[in-house]
Length: 82
Image 1 (cartoon, rainbow, N blue to C red):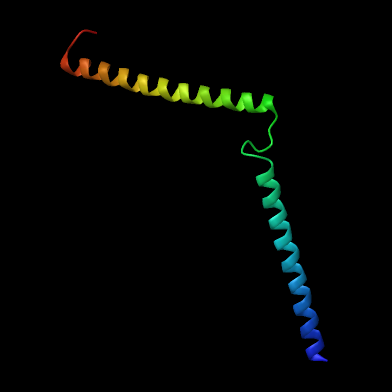
Image 2: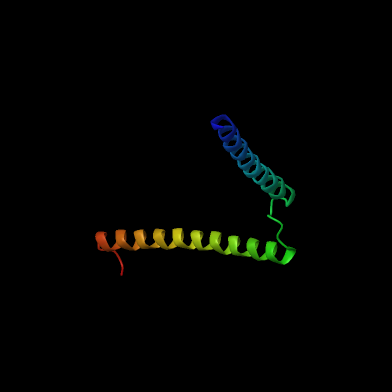
């Protein structure tokens, strides 16, 4: 009787493991089929690209402001023009 129950538990566990592996494989296949943009519409792709360009421009602006601040601080320390 214990051998039958052990077999039943192992079979149930194996079925659960196979189910979850199948879900993982199907999710992976679905992810790779949707393409590199994740299945976004052309409007969403353009919007994402525009947001990335804005972010990059803001990073450049931040670097320019940092440079300007350092120039002004250096002039202030040297007693230069204000």
